[in-house]
Image 1 (spheres, one colour):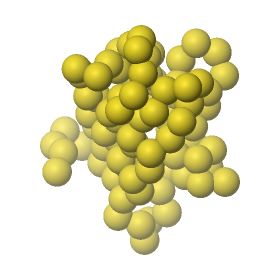
Image 2 (cartoon, one colour):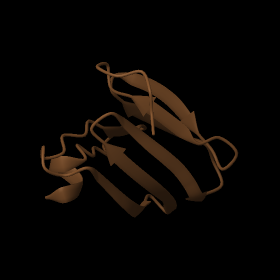
Image 3 (spheres, one colour):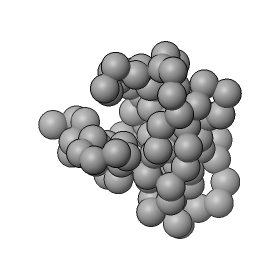
Length: 88
């Protein structure tokens, strides 16, 4: 329930999608996930999502907050909610 509910994780298709919806009394969630043989670390707050590729050979297409980004070991992703333009 946590992955698909609070993180809004969807691994169908070619992209990995996140549409986080944290409970108001949670400040953040941080998880390490294995998706299709790749290991990614996901940190979600009410203002942003940060995604890191810890182990995997190919770049991954990531969608969050209606934005598409390419994730690789060399390139972490930080995407902000539409309500905020700062990240801590």
